[in-house]
Amino acid sequence: MHIHVDATGVFCERALPLLLLSMLLFQGCATAGMGASGSASGDYLSFSVGEGVTQYFIRPLEFDGGGEEGEIDFTFRDGKGDVDIDTVTANFTIRSTTIRKSLDSLHIVTDSSDVTSLRVITLFTEAKGDIIQSRYSAKLLRSAFFKLFHHPKWKITAYSPSGSVSYKTPASSQRTVANLYRDLVRIAEGP
Image (cartoon, rainbow, N blue to C red; front, side):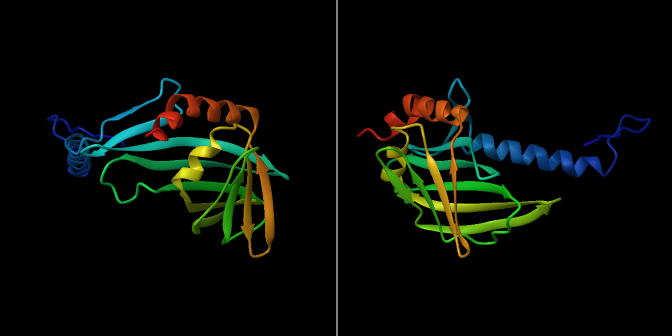
């Protein structure tokens, strides 16, 4: 954004509404208790969303397989009195040459646990040259989700009407999963 100042030092009339909107949004976040905190490694962010309720955002974890790739991020809440406490939102992107405008389910498996999505909705599907990028959102049961972090190697399978495709987490994502268990998940899943 360019802020133009005329010869008298006054904002041009096009920039002033943008400045006012920015100030209102910043003030709204500050007064709503939306100050961000997170891990020293930057693997997640946390926000206070109400008295005794914290929302966590786990930054995207990469996955790949079969010439395709993508990433998945998670959002969940922890605390008392919140209605969304039993589920976790998994938002994920798949980049492929295959068009998948819808998915039936998402399944994540480790050596000792697995979780299947309660539902999957398509957020968008768009072409970027030969690559088709699709973004989806799924709900997972919180208790099963936490168990995934007990083992860093994940197999992620997306089921569509035309078949399934499986992905694995690379070493970098596996390290992040281990860090997330140590820094966040073992505490969130405790009593």
